[in-house]
Every structure is written in structure tokens, then in C-alpha cells.
Amino acid sequence: MMNHTYDSYKADMLARGFDEVISRDWPAGAELDTHVHDFGLEAVVSAGEMWLTVGDTTRHLQPGDTFALNAGVPHAERYGAAGATYWVARRHPA
Image 1 (cartoon, rainbow, N blue to C red):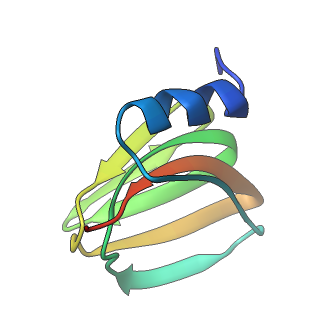
Image 2 (image 1 turned 60 degrees about the vertical axis):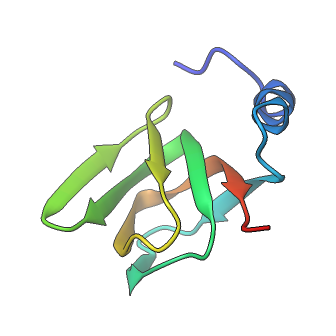
């Protein structure tokens, strides 16, 4: 169960040095093939469910679950029957 609001999450993550915090909504059944980002991130699932695959490991994530990725880490994403929303804090390179 989520113990905070988006606004409190955003304030906390900005205070921790992240430079961008957004809420991402994904439609039911969406899939993203393996890709990378040029920023590091930490996120918390706020609604729905998703599967995050890094290397040979796939995690099933539900509301309240968190995940983090360093910049340049290859990963794939798949979203459940109801889609998913997660709050993500990004740290872009200087």
C-alpha cells in the first residue's frame, strides 16, 4: 500500500538530488522491447502492474513496489491488463 502522495514523493526525490520527477501512465498490454536510457532513475509503482526485465531477471511489480536503474542499463518493460502508472525520479547527466 502506498504511504505517500505524488507531491510528497516528488519533494522527497528532488531533495535527494534527482532533477526530474514525473508520473508515467502506460496502457493495458503495452510492451517496450529492450532499450536503455541516458539517465539513472528510481521509481515506485502507484497503480496497475508491470514486469521489468534486466538481463535474465524479470520482476513482477505492483503498487508500492520500487525499482531503480542506472543510466545505460538494458531493460524491457511489459504492462498488465489494466496498464500501470509509476512515479519516476530521473537523474540526468550534467
